[in-house]
Image (cartoon, rainbow, N blue to C red; front, side, top):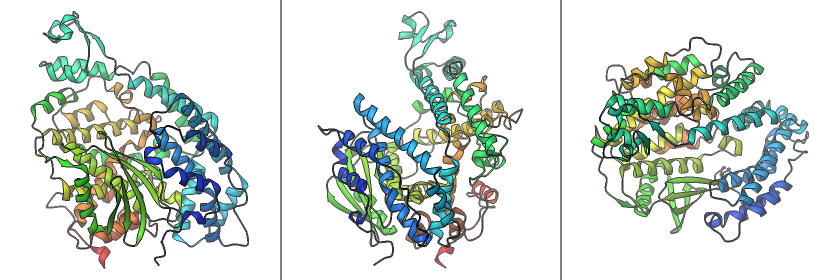
Length: 579
């Protein structure tokens, strides 16, 4: 038997686990069921209490780590289930119950992280030689360090919610005094210069670039006044958090434990990714409207999944069709879990239960339309199935290792690698000059610019900011934005992800570089085992050295990525992991 073979959950000594697993049998239809499962789940949630007798001094730390996992798996499962149901429309009563459970679990976790048993657990793991236990200790320390007071969390979450609410308002009412900017033969003309409608429609129909720019800039400014207080509150709270941890600003504090571990290194990466696409945001709609679409053949979703299954065989991933609505996933001889299929025009995955090797298998709901008719649909479907397989295939014996990454900016490199792997086999690259190609270039430069804005915002001690935002906007889009001071008020991720906004760009770049460097290797399943499964819980540095052939730190990796497609400077492909 493989040493990572799953054991039946029934062997666990936690009553709550039995409840949560019982609920999974109806999970893919629960949202539309006549009787809501929320009251029963919340009842069990409010009865949960953290264990107080985890550590037995007579036992070794490996045994205590397994005991810790078994005693807390109920908490993890309830929390995951609550997050799953939050994604569905709930009645007012059920929403109140879910919120009550969330607050209770958050309070209980905060108390536990400050308890003597938890501190004893940390001490017990400190000298353990097991790589997985050592990695578990690092995740536990992350939880402990990130724990904030209830007052701090209440203030932060209130300010974040207010910022997001103001920004999400799509109302647009402009009094266009300049007659040259009116849209004739339209609703705008009939209302004597007052425009109420779709911004995208106006930007596509308006032939005058200066008019498009003025309307776009006005839209970007819509929340800047109302959100100044909320953003100032968030910045102040983050600054206090950084000072308390011994840092001079929040960007330094947040980046200290990342792959790109300083603002200066992030700046270097962002500058390396800055390319002038010569399309301003106010011109994007017209550029897309004039461009052709990348053609794809319409395919039935079930047929598409069969194609995916065929390709994944090269990675030793097996699909077992239980019925038309359920797929069981295997990796070699190891059961990974189940994917429940639902029909929806929006392509999404909803995690239900996290796989934990030796404890429980995973469950995920995958929503697909009946047919995949457009290029973007098929691209999104590949992205979604890659994320699902990654989540089910990760091979650690502790929940926290499977759900909390070593660094935030390395957490999805494996999923992005698998996405590139599948794209190369299932979907041709978008045609040059097509809508999809233009949108991809624009999205990347918008993310680069916003990442620069986010890094600077949380460096309150740095005046002037590291980036000249007027210049950086022009370097990416070829035009000037007159009021770049409004930029922090244009996207809600700046108050949630903050300085880590760059992380998706970074992870996609690293994943693409890994794929390009190893796609010629014969044993692709070995790459999957090293990068995705990662049973030994190796660090990202060890993984990169295994796949790329030499120790690589952040700055040299940025240079490699920058010249990945430069025939003169690029590094050769290597299959060192097979040695």
